[in-house]
Amino acid sequence: MVAEAKIDEAVVEPADVVPVVEDIEGNEGEWVEYHQDFNLNRVTDEEKRYLERSEEYEQRCNDMRKGAEIHRRVRKNVMNKIKPGMTLTEIVNIVEDGTRKFTGTDANGDHVDRPKSQGVAFPTGVSLNHCAAHFTPNAGDKTVLQYEDVMKLDFGVHVNGYIIDSAFTVTFDPQYDNLLAAVKEATNTGIKEAGIDVRLTDIGEAIQEVMESYEVEINGKTHQVKPCRNLCGHNIGPYSIHGGKSVPIVKNGDNTKMEENEHFAIETFGSTGRGYVVQEGECSHYAKKLGSHPTPSLSGAKSLLKVIDENFGTIPFCRRYLDRLGEDKHLYALNSLVKQGIVEDYPPLNDIKGSYTAQFEHTLILHPHKKEIVSRGDDY
Ligand SMILES: [Co+2]
Image 1 (spheres, rainbow, N blue to C red):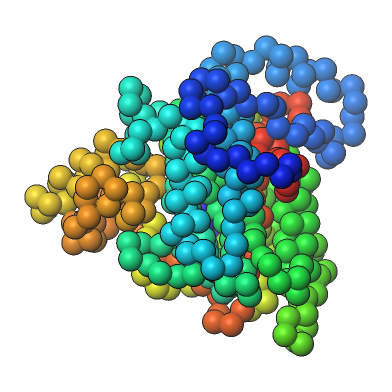
Image 2: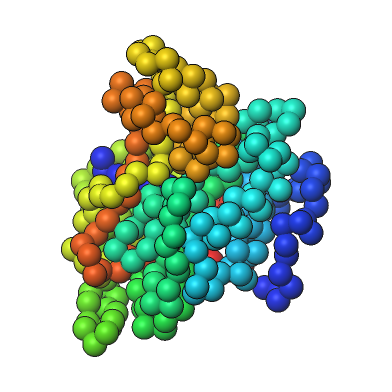
């Protein structure tokens, strides 16, 4: 999910996958030196701090590595299967069923013994073309993926509330290649610039410069690739996809700094449109807000909130996840929870019609001595 500013050829079927969750061990991600620091003498201090890390910190890192390993396996599987002609519902089902298999969640979407302990971390985004983010099909959606589409596949896995948020863009038509190259390099630039004490605006500036250096020709018209300036990466807290800091993809003057041991999703969006998104269209994504809230005024809303608390807590969900829990007549109660400020809605985020947007995203940890790009794979 996004913050608003405000292979080998064998297809791994989810069914072939080791069903016992505890068997999946996440490898470490890609380790990267902080290039901002040229003083080699100080390295030992930070390394020592990392080596003396607490058990709790180690557990958190291992949970994230496991989530990332599941993410890599699920995306490898879905990448092998996606073809024009599939419905978006078929695609999200492959992702979500795969994640549930790996995380040991049962048919009702939750871990049998340890509710909410691990699983799908937020609705699977399958946003097309000018829609940059926060689209997943609701029940009855018949949208079919076309050869000409540019699809952002944004999905998440969490283990004990530690979320891996990672996304890539799927296209079939080679005329979009430069758009994807621009965004991939922009995201990798954000990852390269991230570091302890680095100001967020400086990361945004570096991303913007790289993104805008690309042009793409689509249907005979040349566009400079623009960052979607009101979309941002974000830090991530336990069971909380948006931890309060936003990583801009343009220079925005935010002098807030990244801090040691923080956990960030670095994501960038490039567009052939105006580079600015608005909330538009039918909503599918929701999340219960953190902190205290009023008592629901409707009895239907009260019972729906109980279902949300039991199954998701503050982890984002979509309307399909309520349907599969047997709550298929939820809309009135859900709207009421949104109106009362208990649940937040996240409608689709669109650039102008006819434009194309692309996204790449990774999750990283800022260890004291090095950063670890936890969700890195050999695919992106
Ligand atoms: Co994100």
